[in-house]
Length: 180
Image 1 (tube, helix red, strand yellow):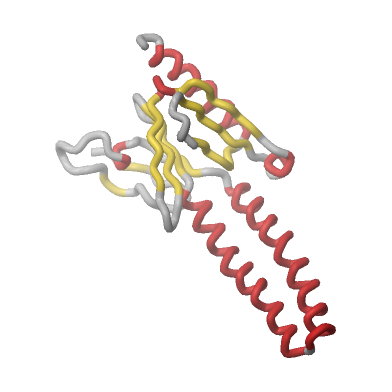
Image 2 (cartoon, helix red, strand yellow; image 1 turned 90 degrees about the vertical axis):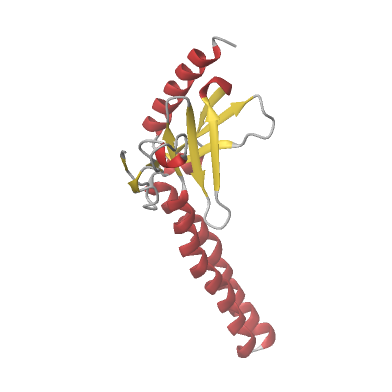
């Protein structure tokens, strides 16, 4: 049995499956989490929306309806505080592992998802980075397969890791699809 390394969430630590079990996510090898910059970026967006909302809503309600109605401006602030924690939990849920024949991507807190992408099914591996992602030093790897419903992507990677992963996945994809 092998010892697994957990991602930022700490899941996946511990012993691999029982003797005789094969192919489960626990045997994926080394799980990798996404960069902390993704958490900073999402929290910055949350703050950029919630602070102006509270700053405008409070005085407008005070002037239009009175001081008791201005208390309603606390609702967006409470939602922002809840969102602060929710964003952290979501960030911690993202992880991926490269296995011999496929790539595993796990994400989600309430609705967990595990995507298994066989290397031989990959048709295109893209690395994208929008202006906000570049500001935070991040990139996203998008995997395209023949299946129309595939939404396999890994956000929040360092650009160097995203390029390394793209090169590796492309190389493995070409090698595995040669027999098709």
